[in-house]
Amino acid sequence: EVQLLESGGGLVQPGGSLRLSCAASRFTFSNYAMSWVRQAPGEGLEWVSSVDGGGHNTFYADSVVGRFTVSRDNSKNTLYLHINSLRAEDTALYYCAKGRGNIALPPALDSWGQGTLVTVSA
Amino acid sequence: EIVLTQSPGSLSLSPGERATLSCRASQNISGNLLAWYQQKPGQAPRLLIYGASNRATGIPDRFSGGGSGTDFTLTISRLEPEDFAVYFCQKYGVSVSTFGGGTKVDIK
Image (cartoon, rainbow over all chains, first blue to last red; front, side, top):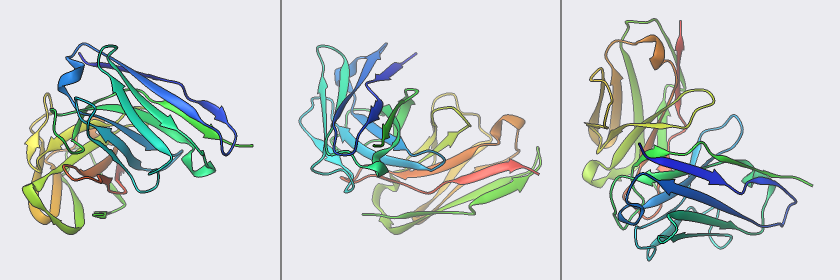
């Protein structure tokens, strides 16, 4: 069974930075596109970013363009999300999710981690 | 960016009843690249349907997806107690993916 374990969340001040990580196991990581999806407390799902299997093609929601950077290290089976210039509205549970296949565009998501909580507050 | 509007916002039904959930897109979704997810409280979402009508691995056949173009539906033929949850649709396969706002299915 696919395993995805997020880490790196926490309490950060507005304007601060974080790096989220997602350790993947039990599948051939480099063969699949990966995504980040977030969920603010009591709210719905918001797609944040995706990256293809090779890490060459990246995609972002308009709300995070220029502030968030997605990357992956296939030698470590790890997905990252670098978050800069954090705002109160970035407060959310951030999920890492595996795509169905390695497509060059954001995929449907067939496995999800349990999320890491990012709280932006002074 | 394609906006997905889900309706109704909530649905109160009894076990054994049929549930029909709607997801309407602001633009045509080419290739029917639409997915449905189920989320229970305190849990991560679970993929139910991809490609508008294909059940994901392990999903019971009481779940079915349909539609094309701008109008899509998720149907649960006979609600089981474990089906009471929130359901989201997602447009994928485009440079900016989006989720609908969700439909909560609760017990009447």
